[in-house]
Length: 264
Image 1 (cartoon, one colour):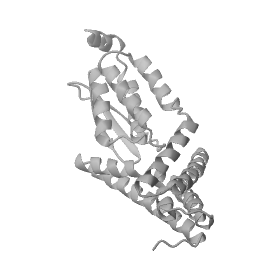
Image 2 (spheres, one colour):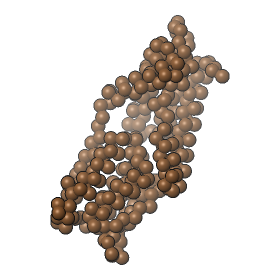
Image 3 (spheres, one colour):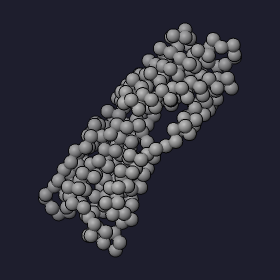
Image 4 (cartoon, helix red, strand yellow):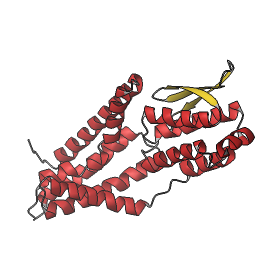
């Protein structure tokens, strides 16, 4: 009864709901959700208000058609996908918001307010993330056979490269340039350790110093989209991930070349 009462009393207009869903889906796609996740969340919200919805998800846009059950009149909206940094935090909270709406735990005005808080208030502790990324890469170095000295080198190279990444993203630099630049700096620092009077597995250090830039999520999402027949988005995400991998490889090669480090 709680869900029914909420739907009848506080159901938004078709236009307001359509605009909300278009913005919602664009942010969900931009934060790293798969196409099937976007579809399920959006349809869950629409059905909570007694509407039907169809989505046309493209790599850069989401087109939504919305109508009442049994009606032939539709409203539609197009939103540009927000290509922000992948955020599992935003992804999770937006999914939880869809369930809160479906379960009648929040009304439409509160949902709009919570949506803005989620997408614009996602503030993680930069220094904690920085430290964890450095420790994670150093741990991978150890897993791949690196010694203690190599782990220390990877930690420093990762910290500096990640700080550069944050600064370049803040300045809205093309992410392909960001990956190339950061991989170059991290590889350069790791390769420079070959001139230090220490014994270290430099090859492992160079290879693991750039793991924070590997586009693993886009590759996985492209595979998921392929399984659910979102072929255009799948191909787009795979191509983007492939381009980023090429940028990463060029950066590593350039850093090693300047330090005259040859591992082949």
